[in-house]
Length: 75
Image 1 (cartoon, rainbow, N blue to C red):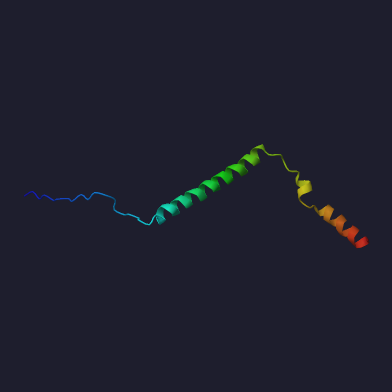
Image 2: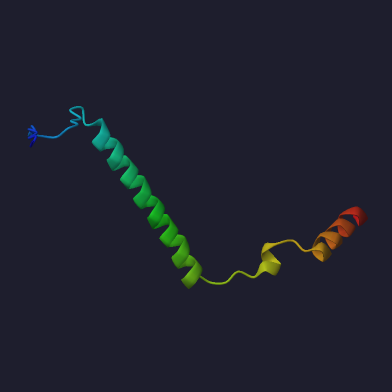
């Protein structure tokens, strides 16, 4: 006993977005992701090729803040 099944093949896409909202959202998502990658690569390149920062001038130290407090209270 052989059983034969007939399959119907439909032509065309299964899901059609006639408004184009899905394509716009995907395009916007792709642009945002590309901008994020470009920004990351820029930060990476500036870290590799940029100049070094002297942390003693960039951050306050306990001795600098103590002397500033002493001079402010004396004056």
